[in-house]
Image 1 (cartoon, rainbow, N blue to C red):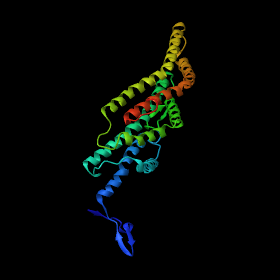
Image 2: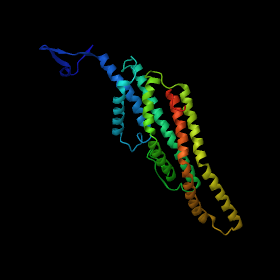
Image 3: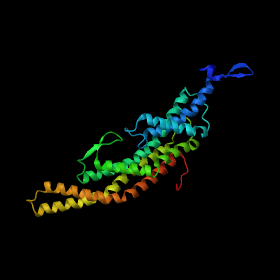
Image 4: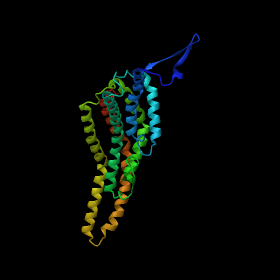
Length: 282
């Protein structure tokens, strides 16, 4: 089957004789698949990655970034499978590429949600949870302390070139996890499920010092209430709890960088295992 959509573009002259270049539909679909399937994996990651996948990021900019990355790396990628693009196998491969990219992008979301959860726990314990604002990641109302931790985590993620590391990993994954119908293994899904529990434990551990400090403060108020029943503990205790909460929040920010580095190294290990990459130190 011959396919010449634009004859003027495929026409040349040889010794005064007019000739045309004819390309088959299979050849054109193969060229299209060489860019479309990598685009699906890269765009899937951009769709869910921190900052790039936020609701405040225009979809137009996200698509342009994915296209630019695909055009830059597609010529050096391994050959694509010889499967018809518009077939059942082609649709399965496309879905697998989107899923792989989305999973890698979600890992960065898991990283920042660890600190958002820790901030919410601290805010509820220190009576700072009454102040809330809209979360730019999911559009829901979140305590301001969680938003503070989210902004700090995002800045550290960008400062440590986390976005560049993830883009490099997704490009290298085309060698270790080539484009095919089979996607992530069962072990990879188990590692991702285990990572969620570990990140929740990290959030609780990060806020544990604030929980213990507020517990001691509440015990002190309980003793004062028994010693002086005429003291209105509800009016005084609320203001004191908020002031102590701000002081505790200031003290806990000193270990934020250490917690972020530990969780970032853990996430890199899971990402490398998922993409079957050999990373430094793991």
